[in-house]
Length: 512
Image (cartoon, rainbow, N blue to C red; front, side, top):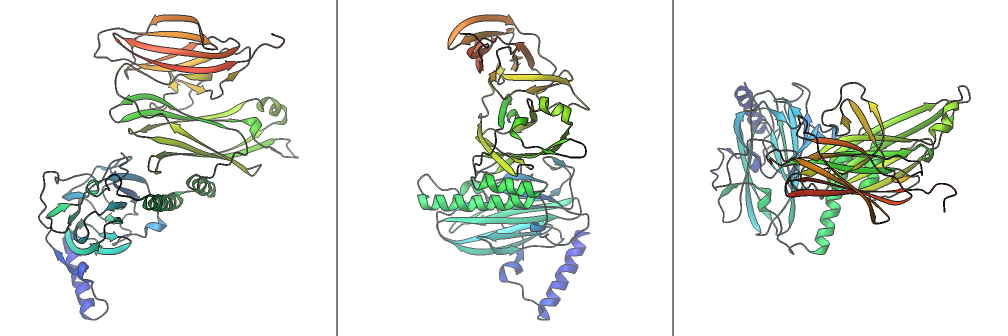
């Protein structure tokens, strides 16, 4: 079917050109067979990308198109991405495709991907590019259209050339797939005095010291502006747009207090399991009262973004929550906090958790930016971050198996406040990940310190791991006036790992 449509499309284009309606630019008219590509590392990539962030690679925004909605590339500015993927190369020869994308499985037709990136040219001269696609695709260099292979068609190839100076350049490859199942997308390059190769972004990065300080600042600004534009495009509410703008422009307002954290749990070869948490004291929020019902209204919006080392957002959390509290309950509620958690997974790397909370009643906002603990090594035994727990409740509905704060059908709500009253009875939650290939039995040691001095220590064997190979534990921690520290050590044979939790306990009234 695609081949028939191509023939009709080409005939129509040639007829229109002959009639003087339009003229095809030379690069667009050079349809030919794909150039021979050589090199040991130039094998097919097969996939369009993965969720693993590649700072110097191509970032592809994935769009789902309405079935049979178009025969040409869409206007991406009018669409919202369904997700993002990353790759260094586009080397997908003609093949059957049915698997879809990470988080969008099974999307084998009517989708589009808009890849963008920057590449460094060391050797100036004329660079030849070749683009093979099924269906439509376009190549832009430095914002200018170089190759156009748009339309619904079987795999075709277009070639063109451009002179490139020794500096950083931008690249954009826009692609769409119409009806299933065959597709193709291959981008090749022949540098000056070189053979044809698959265009690989990892070959086009500057050596240390090649970028001047001015160029680095300029590129950082351009990158920030480009990322901001993309995120504003995908924002779904005015509050999200404003939160994104504040985070990308470095605004750090603090009109009221709230706490946030990112807790690291299991490590594996692909990265780490985390849970982000937000704790908003009710006393930080302004209320409005309904004169008729005497109800107190609290309304706030939370936006959180996990950013990688390049400033790209790789995870989002949004929460829009209005509360109405009867007058009789409002005074007691003022002494509580609103706490929310969300599990997520990160590939190895450096990240920050950046959050904005809007208090609608007060028309105010606060921002928090914290580093996320780097995804650790995969050595076992492993130990999660110890977390203070403020309450345990039954899970409503179907529990999320990936949520580390769900345990035996109950939800553990973390406490981000580390200052406690004199009568506090702290509960601590942590997870041990034993090495199941090690025959030695895992054990733990708990050490309690006050003001830096060890006052108690206890060791005990650990129970058997659950079906997921983990040993979740909740323990009652000691509480005594002063600066308290709980050290937890998980050991198995000769290997051990230790993590600490610090908190303070107030003195009793009247105590010396």
